[in-house]
Image (cartoon, rainbow over all chains, first blue to last red; front, side):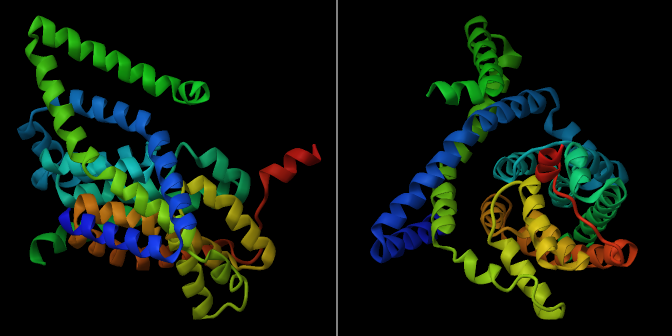
Length: 159
Length: 182
């Protein structure tokens, strides 16, 4: 976290020296994005806080933790495929989940399906590719996401 | 301000409900509500410390990246370099998956192959640099590196399979222009 703050500051200073106007525009753009995401971020954090209070850490570990096995990946894949959460929210959310006992491989499946599989956006995707192509792409992505998660599961403790 | 409230009405209403619940729980010393509040405050503080920095970075990224240079190389040739350009361009983007579809359509019109279009979509959804900076920040470099290195071959394989299955008569449509026709 500290390294991140330092890197950002350095980039900001370099950018300021290079072009003040451009830098200001960039900061304004970033701030607008932040303000627009804030309401949904607050709501999701609130919902997660309720969910985490309902499900104590031990239960969470059992369902989505290291020992959860197939069902952990399965639930993560279903959740990731059907939800529409922007990455800017999904990553902070994943950070919270990890602190509460969810394992990294399960998070990998959740994140990858979230990014590559979109059940809710399927009707839109169909308009560009037609049903056959859209469904096939989503299906292959789902299989790919599970493969990525399982591989991370194998490698995580080794590396 | 008014349009902002309107746009985020559902989220804000939901959060207000949550805030009321927490306030009432606090007043009534309702144990569950207090637990919820502590959980919320904990994760919110962690985020608040760090999110504004992230968005400054994303904003700066947006104004400095020379997308035009990369875009000029799209659609040229079909060798390994065209794949590299596709991935490179995708990593420089920001935004949701459905935002990439109209761009993919333009590439298709410009003559990009089915394989390259699916590689673009794969890279766009999983390897955008602004997203990676979030990933590293919240889940760590080890996770991010491992996931990215595993995802790259996976979406290339998916693109190859898609190309094999549908590449021959591959066609894309544009909903916007279709609507206009009708």
